[in-house]
Length: 377
Image (tube, one colour):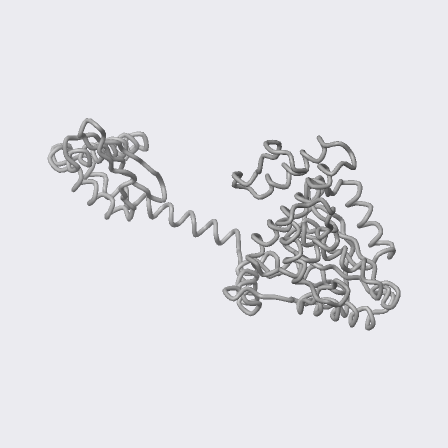
């Protein structure tokens, strides 16, 4: 609004969400309908757009533009500065010349999939579109509902569902009652598409769908199983629109098959028997190595060597957890002995690294000997 010293930019905050929250709070403090409030509302919209760009690694440009279109992000109040006006116009030029629409191959593919599936399924059509980000669910839903052809020509009506009591932006929230209401509308057929994050896999009673679309890449085999689980109806379909290069569908399917086989072949009784057998073998090794701990004279002369021999005989792991030199010039270290039956650590201090390790080894050997005595070895 041209007044100096009244705008404190939040850009020094590391979290992008803090920028949106700042603009939202400043808008609430401004007079309703004032130029100042309009400016802060616009700032919130653009801060959200910036977050979308960063979170998508600049791969969802058209989705960001759709967010700006939906929320009148290119609106010019007329009193904006010359630089602000030029900046708005430069981004607006990224839109197609066709009446401010967006041209995205991915979104065009989504439209084609939905219309084809709706035509094939008819009135029984029920679709779920999975996305990673809450803001993506909101934008895609708005885009589908603002496209007249989707409803009038194809009969597609959509709602979005995200985590209950979650913020999409500071100004847009999803309440528990609203999430439940939308799922109930999907159940009754009042809407036939839900755009959702993975939250609908976690505690929400969502009806089965016959069309499941994964808009974003699958992260792991858990998401793969969830997507297939949602497409449980007979003649249902699952469509993956994008894949991660390091985790293509074929790799995820192989990993899931391996996990399923492990679960199928798991025998708790045999596993318990194997564990008990391994534990008994470990106790036998420690019993056989007990004379080493009883040789106090050798332990005092060569504690580190003795501990290494004992660890080898008992098939344990001996590792140096830390080794530091303090300001007084003395060394401090921590050794750890790890076996199936027990875990011991020892701290040592000395003028040299060797001395401090010897002290730590002595500490562990004493603990092992005391443990054996309690066992009755």
